[in-house]
Image (cartoon, rainbow, N blue to C red):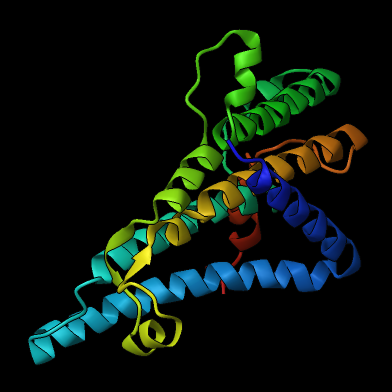
Length: 225
């Protein structure tokens, strides 16, 4: 398997780390805006389909495929964003029942497990060194789609784009699937950041176990007014 996808992902993570160090607020806003854009596109296409179908008896043939892809992008990008912002819910009954030192150790194990999970899904070929039979990972799958060059089922380039760049009508599947290695690289990177923050005492755990309780406390006096 070619190593250039690994190199590009490493460069992407390095550039992301530098930009977040230099412009933390702007990068946070950019990541949030990207997720909002994906959500908005799903809502806009769905609403447009309803109007087109029931108002004009027409519609976009690729709407379902587009929304399916957009929703998968939202989930995949949300994995790392949830770790970054400490939004993932989890069961913390054990963490609350043990001493702080043990709780910290368990949290470190959880962060390391999330990082290992991301690495395995990203590229599992390194497990062959342990004698485990593997078939690759997201990078191998994306590389295969890139070489084959097949298109999506319904998504097509606009006619002027086809004419301008001499493209086939259907959008290449590798363009749609590029989010797989990127999102898993982000998941691994955010898990590593969480591991370091937990070790340094900047955060207590990987999950947010008291979100519902905190919301109740914040809004307990709302109804009194």
